[in-house]
Image 1 (cartoon, rainbow, N blue to C red):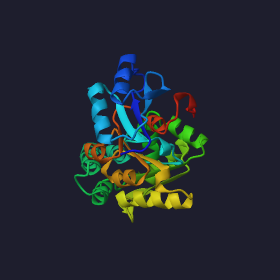
Image 2: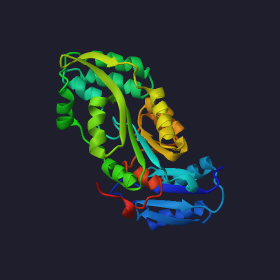
Image 3: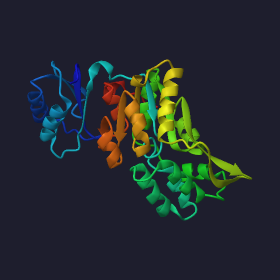
Image 4: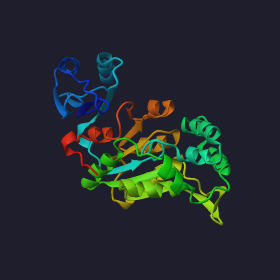
Amino acid sequence: MIENPVITLLCPPGEALLDTERMSAVRRVLGDCRSEWLHENHVADFLPDAQADAASVLTAIRTIIGTLPIDIALQDRATRRKKALIADMDSTMIDQECIDELAAEVGLKDKVAAITARAMNGEIEFEPALRERVALLAGLPDTIAGKVIEQRITLASGGPVLLATMKAANCHCVLVSGGFSLFTSHIASALGFDEHHANRLEIQNGKLTGRVIEPVLGKQAKIDTLERVAKEQQLSPEDFIAVGDGANDLGMLGAAGTGVALHAKPVVAEKAKFRIDHGDLTSLLHLQGYRAEEFVSP
């Protein structure tokens, strides 16, 4: 049971699906509770007076929503606003998997992408899968990351607003990736993260050797990073909102106060505390109770 529940319904950007009839139906299911707009007709909070059983409440609301692309979250309203963000990079803060894009430079994108998909869905272990894929990149120039970033990497929708808004609220923001520092350094700078952590590719004579500098930053390393940063910032893991999409993010999502699976692989969406299947990264702000008018433009 959740002591001070808030139920948030979130529509995809640009889709105003929360009409009067649908809002009234949800309020009735929740005992005629009050509701508040975070973004009129797009995102709403419902605030029951009594404790809420998560499973029964979510089941009842999903019956009303049906197949509409509306995300639902139930949490404690007293602890929803966070002091820090920790985020995955590939397919989370950017739209691509960087290792797949590097593999495209040697004509092996399909082969590497298939391995990436299996690792992200938890079908194979992350660390050996990373070493296997990196070995295929041997011989690429160390300038290749800059070319890939310029030509094929795009920031995920809502990411710049998420970072600008949380930074304006004095939140500490961390980018942690099972990908590569050649990419996180650029993305962290572009978005305004306070720090970034990722795997380092070995380089000799200006070329990739096909090896990762050990130790590999995998699932446990993401948890360790969260706990270390929390200690350094005099916070607790409960003070963090975390976001990711792959199996190597599950530990981090579970350790954070609010762990969000964003357009995640099935195994991740199923196990995460919260899931956003339809919205973009600004959904993380609404989950914390930010109203649309509080968003900060980068």
